[in-house]
Length: 577
Image (cartoon, rainbow, N blue to C red; front, side, top):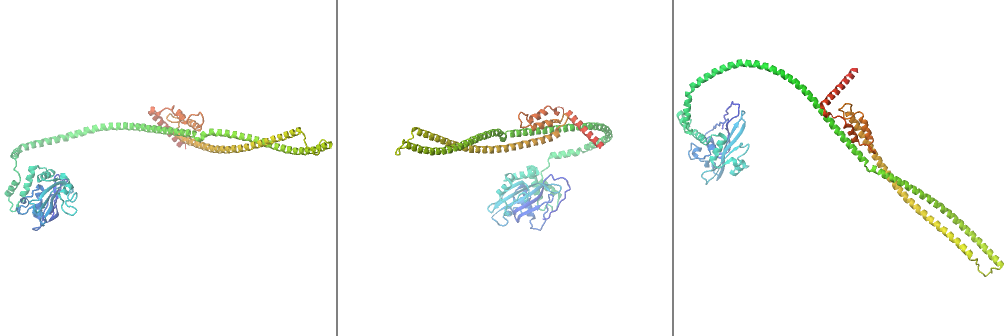
């Protein structure tokens, strides 16, 4: 097969479809054969028996009408070669086959912009007299967008083809297939499409080019084409008769066109001069308008700048207020801290410790007095015992003396018992009872001394516990005081930064120069009783300040004046230096 390319000089893409490829699968000796067209043309060249006629037999006009009549397939052999014999060429029991053709619209570079593939599949067995047909018309290209062979390189079955292309792309009858091909590719209508197929059949007649006779060619075309309508013939005759009138009208129109061209040339020169003058006036007005617009744009830019500065100032003021509120909240939190609240309990504890210490001192004094009394009583008891011994010895001596005297006097005989009388007994008994009472008192004082010592130990333990709680409360109080000092220092630094940025002497300033000292004093007094909170002090200073939003133009003028004065002072300093 030899391809003869055909050059095309058109720059635009093809409006109509042209055949680009064709293929035969499972027919005769073609397992999977593909033919490529050059600009819609195909030349088949080869020796006899190579398959040139068989390729035309199974392609044209079969892919256009789907008719399997043997006389339409092969004009040379009559009814001998049928499509069944082409499918069962190798002697198999059953077979599937496909013939397809690809049509495309191409661009100037030959690239396919839109492709449509049409064709039919056939299924036959030996008992069948005529192969069963199924048809398809689909967008896409065989071998690129879809294939007609399965994984084992066998032709697809009918159900597999429907699944692959979809129900809307397959057709069961040749009539529906011809209508689908005409609608998608040609748009001729049923009658003209059938006429096109008949013309192809006439042009495929055997030995048509041998001894070419114009009359025979005319007869062939007449047999292939339908007659021209008589109304069209009459219309053509009337058009030939009107050629003279059309020529005269053309000459008149040509003269009028020349006159109009001359007039247009002169009038165009006039219009150019007039338009140039008008353009000069318009240009001057445009320049004046542009100058006014620049002035307005500058004023608008200054206004927008002032609005942005005002918005920024308001945002930073709101930020400062929120910061003041946060600092006030933190100071209030510090004031409500447990360590601060425990200061009152710490004072009460101190009073209690002082009272306990005084009680302990009193107990110690009582204990000392009791010990002194005990020592005195012990000394007195020792003296009483010594005196008792002396009295006993004296009494014994006196008794002996008395008895000796009584004996000497004969008052007392040697065998008589000594009886000094009841007075002596009562006196001795009373003295003994008195001493016993004193000893009981001494024992009672000793018991009181032991109890006082135990009370002293218990109070000492309470004093140590209170001293520990006092130490912990003092540490917490010191930590809270340190946090309070740090918060005051941080607030003072932030206030200094805010005041240095937004303080001034004009009406647009958020703070005055003296307001910083008031706010610092308010921060220093945080935590004291009957002192106004910091947000209240800040609002009292800023609420009376004039709002630049009420007169933005005046604020902008003041801002420009302030900027001009600062620039003047800077130039003066540079000139002085």
